Length: 465
Ligand code: 5GP
Ligand code: SF4
Ligand code: MG
Image 1 (cartoon, rainbow, N blue to C red):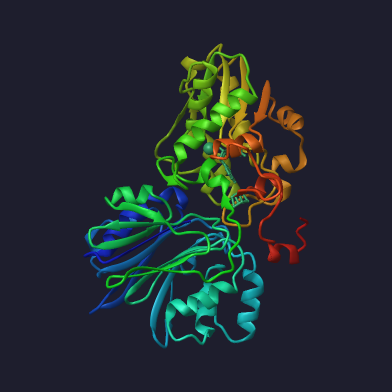
Image 2 (spheres, rainbow, N blue to C red):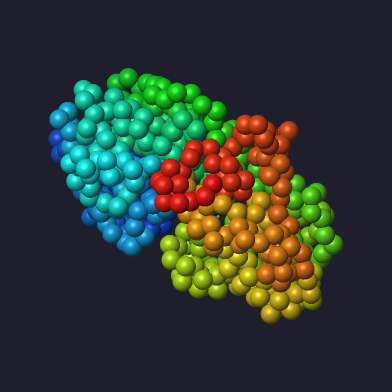
C-alpha cells in the first residue's frame, strides 16, 4: 500500500491526491482521504479504483477541505480480497479527546490474535482489515492524548507497519522497530509531508528532509514542527529488500540510494554471475527494465525492446485474483515480432513467483520465432511467502518452493534460467560485503525463509517455518 499525509498547507487534500497518484504503483484497488478543517471538522472519501478517476474533480475535492489530510492507496494483502468499501483506509476513530485517522502500510502478523482478544473485550470491528486493530487498541488505552495512545497501541502490534495518522492538529508518522516498510518526511512551503516514497514528494514540489527511522514516531504540528519519539525497544533494522527489487518506484531514493541504480546494478551483478552468449537483452517491462539495462551494459550485448507493454494496464502482480492475473499477461505484454525473429534473447525480469507470467512470456517469444530464450531474474528464487505486506501466494503456489532451479528451467522450458544470488543482490543494494548471515542487513524472508518477526498468526494456523 501507499500512504501520504500533509499538514500546514491550504487544501491539503489536493496535495494528498497528487501524492497518492504518485504512489499508485503501491496499490490500485482503492484509495481514500481523510482531512480536517478547524471549522468543518473531519471529512473523508473512500473509493475503488485509481486516484486519477476519483480524486480529481472539484465535486469531490471541495468536500475535503482543510490544512491537514492523510490518504491511502490500497492493495489487499490481509483482509478480504473482495471489494468492500469498509476495508478501504484511512480508518477513523472518535476518542474522548477528539477524532483520529490512520493509514497503514504493511501487515500486522498478530492481527488475528489481537482481533479475537479485542472482540472478546467488546470492540466492534467494521472491516476485515488487520489495520483496524490499531484503532481499537487506541480506544482501549488510558493515555490522555492521541500520540500516547498510538504508542500504546503499536507496542502491542507485531510485524510490519509504516503508519501515517492525524488528529485535529497533528500529523503523525511511525515505522515499526525493524523499519520493514518505507516512510519519508518532506517539507513543502510552510507545511510538512509524510510519504511512503520520495517520488511522491517530487510531484508536489516538496523537498526531501529525511526518512522516518525504524522504530521512530514523528509528531508534526504547524506550531512545533517535527517532534521525534522512540516508542519501541531498538532492534537492528530489516528493510524489505524487495522494495529495491520491485515494489518501489525506480525514481525513488531509499536509504540514500537510487532505486533505479540499485536495479541497474542488479543487472550488472547478474551479467557477471550468469553470462550467456546471445544477440539481445530484453526486459520484461516495466519491472525488469533497469536490471536489463545493467545486464546489457556489463555484457556488451545490445539492449532492445523485445516485449512491448500496453501502458493502460496496471501491475499484474497487484491484481488480486489469479484469473485476472492469468489474462493480464496478454492484455499487458506483447512481443515485438520483427525484432525477435531468429534472435537469441536474454529476457530479464524482476522475479519468478508462480511462474505463470514467465511461462506465457516464453511461449509468446518462441511463437514470435526466437532462436533461444534465456531468463535472467533480478531476485533470488521466491521460495517463501511474505507476511509483511507484499502479496505473495501460499507456499505451495510458489514455483521455487517445490522445484530446484533446474526443475524450474525445465518447467518453463527455456534454454537457461538463472537467478541473482542473495549476496549479489545485497551488493547491488549497497552492501559491498554481501549479506551478513549472522544478522542480515535487510528482510529477505521470501528468498531465505528467515523471518525477522515470527508470523505468529500464520504459525498458529499451522504454517511451518
Ligand atoms: P510469475 O512468472 O511468477 O507469474 O510472475 C512474475 C512476474 O510478474 C514478474 O514480472 C513480477 O513483476 C510479476 N509478479 C506477478 N505476481 C507476482 C507476485 O505475487 N509477487 C511478485 N513479486 N511479483 C509478481
Ligand atoms: Fe520484503 Fe520479502 Fe521481507 Fe516481504 S518477505 S518484507 S517481500 S523481503
Ligand atoms: Mg513484472
